[in-house]
Image (cartoon, rainbow, N blue to C red):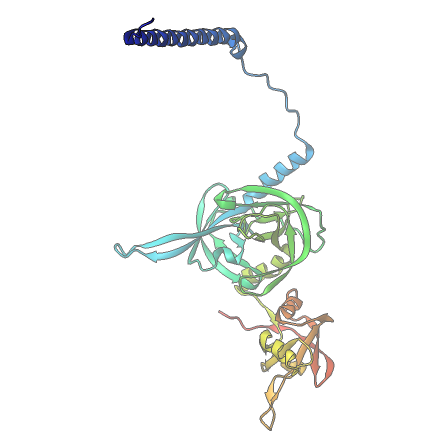
Length: 392
C-alpha cells in the first residue's frame, strides 16, 4: 500500500514548470536565430551601396499648344494685378489712422495712364485700395467711378509707365461655345494664377450687386475662385474678352460654372468713366409700381395681364415726350391705372427684370419701340432713351 507524500507532489510540479520554461526559452532563441538568418539572406536584395541617380530621359520640345499657353501667360500676366480693399479706422489709444484689410481680388491694367478695371464688388464698401503689380510693387489706388449695375469699377494708380502693360482687347459679340479660354487672377491670394477651359455658354444673365440683371454674360468652365474676381478672361490669341465676376457654388469655391462680364460691355462704359467720371445710363424716365403689387392686381382681376405698370412719368423724360400715361386719380376719386408696359422692341416684358434686361445693351440716344396695354388695347409708341439722373 502506497503512502501519499505531499512534499513529493510539490517537487514534481516544480520540475514540470521548470521544464516548460526551458522549452519556451529554447523556442524563443530558435525563432530569433531563424529571423536573423532570414534577414541575412534577403539584405543584399533590399540595399545596394552602388545605387546612383537615374539617368534623365530627354524631354524634347514642348507641345505646340503648351508653348502657346506659356507665351500667352507670360505676356498677359503682366497686365493682371492684385487688389486689396481696405477699411480705414482710427486707433483708440494712439489715434493713428490704420488701414485694415477687407478683401482681395484681381484687376486689369486698362491703359498706360494707370487706369485699372475690376469688379465693383471687389471694392464695394472699401474706403481705400492697394494695387500690386506683377513685379510686387504696390501703389495706393483712387476710385475713378463705379457702375454697380454692370459690376464695373475703375481705379487709378500713379505707377511709372515702364511698369504698366495695358492688356490687349478683343471682342465678345462673335464668341462661340467651345472656344478655348484662359483665366488669370489671384485666387485665394495666390497671385498670377492661370486656369484654362472653354466657353460653356453665352447670353447668360446674372444679378449685379445693385440687384439689376446683367445680360449677355459669358459662361466658362475655367476655374474661377474667390480672388479671381476682376481678373482677365482671355481668348487663345491672348486678347481680353471678359472680366471674371462670379461663380455658381453653394460653398463659394469653384464648382465648374463661372461667369465673366463681356468686353463689349466694358468697352462702352469704361471709356465713359475715364472721360467724364460718370456713366450715362439710358432710361424711360418713369417710376413703376412694384412687381408684387402688379401680381396681386392681376390675381384680383383688376389688371388683365402682367407687365410693368407705370406709376409716375417724369417731366421732360423720354416716356413723357412719347405720351406714356402715369397712374392717376379720376375726378370721382378712383384710381386710374397707368400704361402697362408689355414689350420692348417686340420682346415680352412681364416684370421689372425683363425691362432692365431689354434696356441693358441700349445707349442714350437709342430709339426703341415700347408696347403698352391701355384701356383694353395694345398700343405701340416710339421713344428716344435719355440719361437717367445719377444716384449717389
